Image (cartoon, rainbow, N blue to C red; front, side, top):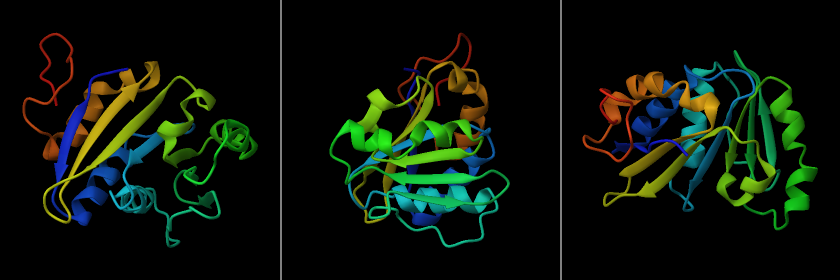
Length: 176
């Protein structure tokens, strides 16, 4: 697991802006795990992410449909595994096929299915803040694919970065 890049947002629009900044860095086949309490901003994040990819359709939570697919500059696969109870059910969703098709996949509650996922992904943990729209987002690059983009991640997320956040930076490189 890589360093934790800790961010703060104070409005839904800021959470969407963080997502838009990350959308500029993604490549075909990338996987992002979204973790956090109900109402913490996972779907709002996905809306901002999709908008930055040029998705014109309305993005909604796939809690009951399990997966939604959207077209933009990259295909966006949006999964919600909250209602899945067993690993077999997760594997039946075709996650591995989605990752191989060249789109970008965001999985809400993805931390619950880690054994079914590849070794490289970007985890975003949403923590509720004091105010109604205050959020702390811990962005954690896991695996070689995201570790190679650490400098770009730090630069893209700098406007929302907590100074002195946790995370082992590269030698001579400040933590985000």
